[in-house]
Structure formats: C-alpha cells, structure tokens
Image 1 (cartoon, one colour):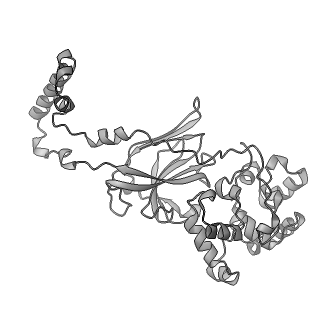
Image 2 (cartoon, rainbow, N blue to C red; image 1 turned 90 degrees about the vertical axis):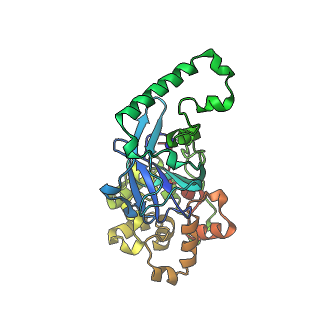
Image 3 (cartoon, helix red, strand yellow; image 1 turned 30 degrees about the horizontal axis):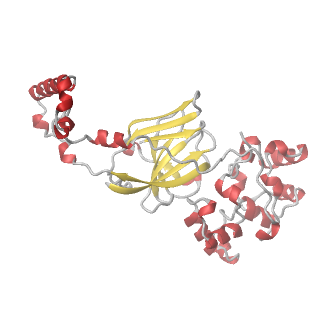
Amino acid sequence: MVLVCEGSRWVGIGFSESGKMMNSDAVLGITGTAPEKYRLGGYDQSAVVAMERQRQTLIDASVNYYDADDVTVLKFTKIMKEDGEVEIKPGKNTFLYAKGIFEDLNYHQERDLFELNIPKVDTAAEVAPAAEESSEKKRKDRDKVKKDDDSAEDPSAENQPKESKRKQGRGDGKQTLAEQFASLGPIQLRPLKDLRPNLSPPVPVDDEFPYPYPKIRFTEWASLSHQTREIMKENFGYNKGNWNALGLNDNERMTCSQLADAQRQAIQLLGWNCDVWDCFINHYKSYNAEQLGDKKLLGHVDVVRSAWVKLWADLSEDELQSATRLCFTEFVWDVGYLGAS
C-alpha cells in the first residue's frame, strides 16, 4: 500500500471490521522511524500500542518526507491474513486513514474511512512446491524469460492474438499478487477539507451549548494577550504547540475536579468555571460511568464515540445534538488545530 499525504507528520492506515477505530489494527508511520503495526484499543493515545516484535511482519515498509513536494509517503506490504489480527479479504474491505498534526504520534488532524475492492487471486499459482525449486528449473525459467523478452521485441509480435500476447513474460496468463496490487496504484485519499485554517474558528452562538462558549480557548496562541499566555503557561504548561493543537496538553485530559487549586483559580481569571472546563475542554472524556450518569450524558457519549470517524457535515440530527451537548463545534470536530502553522 502507498499513502501520500501533504506535510511532514505521522500518517497511518487502519484495518477495521466495523469501520470504527476501537479494536482495529493499523500501520503507523512516523518520519525517522520504521513503520510498525499497532493495536488500537481505544480513543486515548495510551490505548494505541505497538504490537509485539514477532507480529511486526511488514515487508518493504518505509515512511519518508519529501521536502521539495511537502509530502509524507508511507509504503508497506502486509500479509492479508495473520492470527489475532483483522483480516484483509478479497472483495470489499474497510480501511481507516489518519494524519497527525506533527511528526510525533499524537492527536490526528485528519481522519476518514474508505473502501477498497481487493481482487481475488489464485494463490496456488503463486506457491510452487519446494522440491521443484531446483537449479535446473531456475535456469530454464531464466532462459524462458529471455526468450519471451526477445519475442516481445520482434515487430511480428504485434500481430499475435491478444490472448497470446497477454501470456508473454509469465507463461500462464495470470498476474502475480504483486502485479495485481500494483495495478491498483497508490491510494490517493481525498482531502477532507482545508485543514490548515488561517483564521481562528468562528464563535458559535452561546445558546447552542449548555454553558458559555470560552472564546479564549479557541483563539490562536499568538493572538492571546501577554497576560493570558503567562497565566496558561505558568499554571498549565501551555506553549504554542500544545495550545494550538486542541487536546494535546495533558491537563485537558483531566476533569476540573482533578486540577490543582491554583489551576482552578487560573481558569476563573479567564471567566470559566468547572462546567465550562469539563464540557468544552475535556468534553467529559475523563468522566466515569457514574459521573456521566449523574449528568445524564451516557447516551450522548455513546453516540459521539460511534460517530467519531464521520465528518461534521455527515452527522445525523441525533449525532449533532449529542456532539453539541458535549460542547463540540464543527471546527473542533473536523480540524482541532488553531492557526496555519
């Protein structure tokens, strides 16, 4: 498989039976390292775990950034059926795609799913008995290939029947596995949308949400006042990178009650309260089932988890209602990154 993405960042292809990230497998490529297979056990980064060494069976795997074209290219060959992994079968298969914000593995800036129709092949034609792999057979094969090459250069070959021409070079008229997959060409995924905004996200109408919209949190770092930057830097360890990339700062994975007293006082200086933090910043991701039940959010969380692979424009009315109840906006859902760089 070949995946080409704009920019220098981590990229990945997932293999899913349900079309969802949860409990799927993936090949992730991080520039400067060899691509590896991962098990995606959940939505949190800690649940994305590299498979054991004996399961790292990729062939000719590489990930490279090409500065001249500003693209990252992930290439690999994967065995279709492996014990304990999602099987890639002949016919229609569902794949997941993700692209990160930076080169290091973290929040994905883009995500999507797509389908590929994998051709059915005659694997028996690919595997010859070991006893037949003698030096004499290899010599004859080389002679045959040379003879076929010579006939291909003969102008009279143009007058041969199509069936005969198709058999030249292999002798049985069947493509190898590699040839069939090569015929599919690189996977050129459609861009989800322009995910490199030059402006801060639009301010939604307050009455869309259960709590006041914290405009400051969705303002690019460079556009914040010096005082605000100092408050967030001193109390939360924010900087340009983990402020502009929503959800990247570890504190955003905590509920308000888990924050230190000084941190809760800091958000009050910004005009926020714990309800605003838990909804707009954490999106209730760190609530347990009992806490979600107390706020009557269990159903909304289940809907959002199921819909997470979709784009905002593709959400149903019920999914939009649940996403809004958890204080997601279209910008946060689809983009999640403030500023152009």
